[in-house]
Amino acid sequence: MSAVSHNPAHGDAVFLVEVSEDGLTATGEFRPAVGSGNPLDIEYVEDVLFQRDVSHNIDWFAIHKAIDSCNTTHSIINDVVIARGTPPEPQIPERLVVEPRFRRRQPVPGAVDKQTGAIDLRERHLLVVVQQGEQVARRIPPQEGKEGVSVSGVPIPVPVPKVAQPETGENVEEHDGVVTALVGGRLLFDDRLIEVHETLTLSDGVGYHTGHIRFPGHCVLGGAVRPGFRIRLGGSLHIKETVDVTEIYAEQQIVCDGGLLGHGEGVVRAKGRIRARFIENVTVESHKAVYIKQSCLYGKVRTLDRIVLGDKSRVVASELVAAHGVYAFSLGNEQGARVNVWAGINFVVERKIENLRRQVERLTLRITRLRTHLEGHENERARQRCQELEDQRSELQQKIGDLLGSLDSSEKAVVAVKDRIYPGTVVHICRAHFVVTEPLKGVEFRLNARAGVIEHAPLERGTFPKLQELEGD
Image (tube, rainbow, N blue to C red):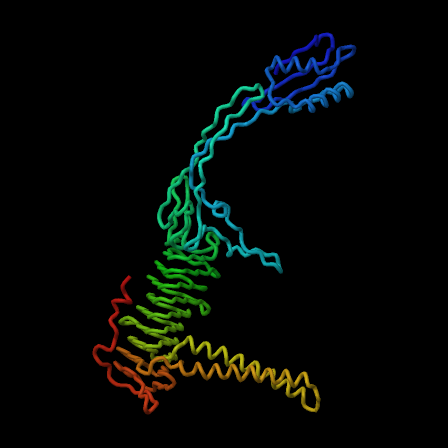
């Protein structure tokens, strides 16, 4: 702080100037005269500015206003910006910059229910996930720097700041200044590298610390899955231990080193093969083969391929549906726990038929109610509506008829049992069925298509498929 005064001791007004350390701002303090001292005037202020070497971009309007206010109100006017320098523009080299939407570091807290306002913390988004072909970064051209000018008119050199210049890494490519993801996966970036990891590793399991998992690539899962949390993948899933299941889906295969526990409501689905040590109280569905090494207890297993169970395995109180056959070590137990086995059935078509039949039942109920209402009444509009519903029902029944032709997927499907099959087990092949009434050992069941019945015979060598492709990684 510096002051130039006529004579402060005589009560003259004082004008003080302070220049910021970077030389880009000058602020003034205007102190009024005391008693008969001389008031502030512009000549005095100009003299002070000259002595303090303030000459660039002076705000004369602010100065005149402060002088008038100080002299009129006899009060101190401070922190008045009286001059502003011209800041320099930095010189920035060419660089890659990640798209702004991916630079978000704070996770989305969760989805808000519009009706209740409650936050579902399972819907948190903690991973930066990109899809194949999505733009993740762009190249910014170099920025030429420009000198600045201080309030004293002195040139300020062009700054050259340190700027992150990351390179492209794994699973990304740059073309014409645009960086895109070659695969769907997790986007990782820092000052050195921009890359996409196709495999997500969850060493601590899935829970509130992760939210639901929706990932376009593969996943390796270690640790527990908390109840109510879902996993949905565009690739394969490798589960390293036994897990509780709410809902798991994978576009490719699922391999579980332990077991799958569903507590009666859990569902595991995959378009690729599924392999597990055991399953219990869970529904498992696949378009490819399913291999269960040890046991299936109170489970539902459905596949468009084969179900194969390992040696010494057991199936108790379960439902097995396989388009191309079931190969088990044993089925049922001495207590007569019911096991239903369907072979040669396309469970996807069966489900479509069931859905259509439920729609037909609902339409039939509505038609019956309308007809009851129309008895003894003349209501043309209601009659037209009844006819529309009947037409809809006929259309659905036609769809059911069309689907029935593809329900039986393979009349050559086999149900083979190496060890024992116990009473209480029911074997279905296509639309024929066989009720096991006495223990059988080492048998295979096949459909006699001409007679429309299921026949059983001693198990032949080579009936069981080789398991290498199911047991291998």
